Length: 100
Image: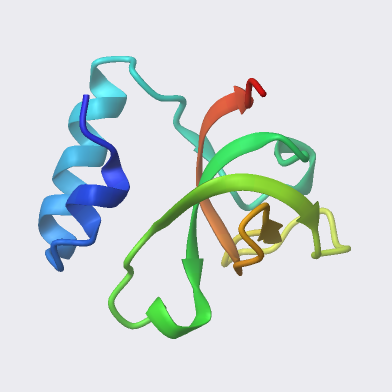
């Protein structure tokens, strides 16, 4: 299965959303909303939107290292730092704890 990030990097927001819908319908990913802090924890594999990508909606895939939002809910998504160091708001949780 190709990674969503590969398809999203092609620059087509429509293709990215279509692929997400197909993956979620097939049950290959969890469709968990990223707006509730209780759903987010270190080690989760997520898709975030970086600040620079807010206009395009381009998603970045990664593993949560730190949760930066203190409030229990944020309507644009909980802000996290990925293990790669990138910071953005969670749009989708795609897997449980990442295996090391």
